[in-house]
Length: 84
Image (cartoon, rainbow, N blue to C red):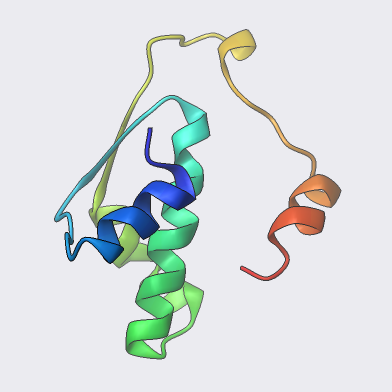
C-alpha cells in the first residue's frame, strides 16, 4: 500500500515507522523513498545506509512463483528512478 507516496504522506503527518512491512513486490519502491530520506538526513551514501534501511523492513509474499513477481529491466528503472 505505501509505495513512495505513502512514505511521503507518513512523513507529512509526522509519523516515522520503526518497521515497514512490505507485502509483494510493488511496495518495495517505498524503500527507495526510505533510503532517500535517510541519505538526506544523514548525508551518508546509499551503501552506508543500506543495512539500516534493510533492518527497518519485513517482506512477505503470497505468491511464491515467478508469475507473481514484478520484474523491471535496468533501463526502465533508470528512466524512472535515475534521480534516486
